[in-house]
Image (cartoon, rainbow over all chains, first blue to last red; front, side, top):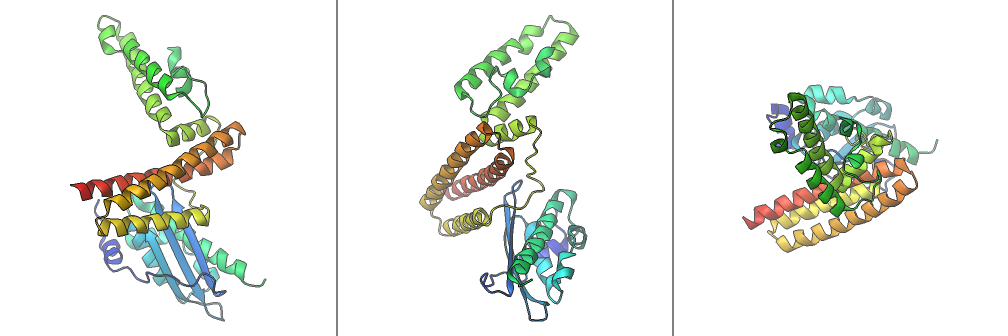
Length: 127
Length: 175
C-alpha cells in the first residue's frame, strides 16, 4: 500500500516518542488497542497548573498509519486544554494524513487514546 | 436444500456449543465433502449441481471457522446476537495492553539480537495465555456471559496476531 508523504514523514521521524511518569498527578495515560490488527498505542499528556497540555508522548506498536496518527496527535495536543483535546476527531487525523479507508481505524485508535488519557487525568484531579 | 439453512455446527453434525470434538469435526467435514463432491454430480441436473457446490463452499467455511478457537467463539457469539467489535472496540484492560507492548518490545529485541530461542520461548508463553483464554471462554459460554466472552475473543485476536508475527520473525531469522 502506498503511504502518503505525511504518513511517511511521521513514520520515519516520529515526534515525541517516549514515556512520562504515569504516577505524576499532572500526567494522564491512555492505552488502547485494536484487536483486528493487533496495534497497541500508549499516549500520555502532561498539563501545567493552568490546565494546558504542555507535553505529550507516545509509544505505538503497529503499522505506519498507527504510528503516524499518534505522532501527529502529540503535536496537535500541545497547547490545548483538556476539553479542546477531547474534541480532536479521528476524521481530522485521517484527513491530515490522507489515510485510505482501510486505515481509518488507526486514526480511531489515536482519538480513543486521547480520550482515555484525558479521562485518566481527570480522574486524578480533585473534582 | 435444507442443509443451507443450518448453522455451521449443525452442518458439521456437532452440538452448537464452544467445546467441540475436533476429531469429529474432521471426520464429518470429510464425509460431507465426499457427499457433495462435483464428481458425484456429473450427470445431475444443473440445479442439483449448483446446490451441491453451495453446500461444499459452506462446508469449507464452516470447517475453517469451527476448527479455529477464536473464529469459533466469534461465530458462536454472533449466533447469540453478540458482535465482538474487533474493528471498533479499542478499550482493553490496561495490564493486558501493557503485556502486549512488552511482548512487542521482546520480539524487536530478540529479532535484533537474532535470538531464535528467545522468540521460541515467547511463543510458548503466548500459547499458554491462549490456552488460558480458551478455558475462560469455555466457562463464559457455559454461563452465557457473552460480554466477557466477547472481550476474551478480542484478547485472542491480539494473541493470534502476535503469534503470527513471532512465527514470521523466526522464519526470517532462519532463512
